[in-house]
Length: 139
Length: 238
View 1 (cartoon, chains in turn cyan, orange):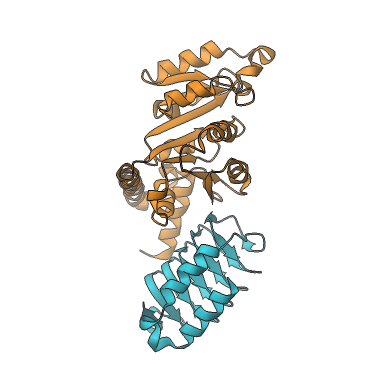
View 2 (cartoon, rainbow over the protein chains, first blue to last red):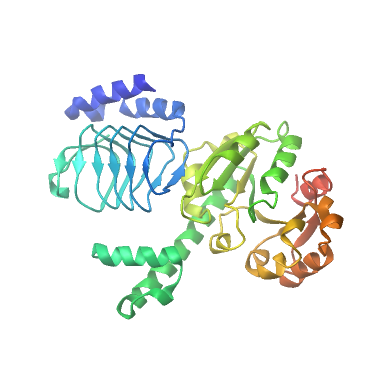
């Protein structure tokens, strides 16, 4: 699993070439190996559809649905009413309220401090308080 | 819609009572509730179609905590795992205890932890099956979250729904939970091996179930001794 995560992180570093990359295959490979790790999050009983793998100190808000196939890196924060499946969130990320992410990757350190976003098949990156400033790339 | 209004609707949906809605948003809350019910039904139909397209037999198993849903499933899967490729979706508010028990009998499992929700809904099931190649299965069992109330709000799109109660819950358990008996195809009264010791009036339970739902098939079983498990499987067409 670590191997795929490292490769995916390398790929999203080269943001403009995402579309042509093999990110989809890598994500599939990662999800096929993904186990559950639900012991170390901070929050109040979200809904999990396995597999969901949470690194240490992930903060999860109310009415959140995670899975299937979700990896969340350490110290990331998922706010209320978020739903995500087939998605990778790297460490130290903030996902705002009522985001719906399907088949997405969010780069390390990204911070989306706004509400209501629905995205599919995309890499998301940046530190922003508004939807208009969000950097995203479809794949 | 402003976030605070959205939150209020969300809160009301959680407690499932429109009576709590402020007068000025009552209409909106009712419309939202109707839309949610309709969406569940549409998704359940889609789930059912996908099962049918892949020749999968499917069952939703509901019942109170400790009635023996998992124990019955273990007995059934033990007998059929070499014959049918089986997927079992287990619903619990937390843990994967049930999925681990079932996996020992060589069925594939997916655990859903519903957190603070007291029933599975068609969206949960749809999320799972859209990530699976359904060609790989002949049978799908969905073991719902253990209680006799909330699952009546959500159909899941299975061929049949089984309701499991047991002699330990007392002879009033059926008449106290009519809605789920109305919506089920087979009623299983489990732990029949304890009937004499507990003095439970099983005949009353059977006649209550029949009164509530004329079409329901009722069977008494013991997952512990194996009594009537084969008969139950016949009723399920296995």
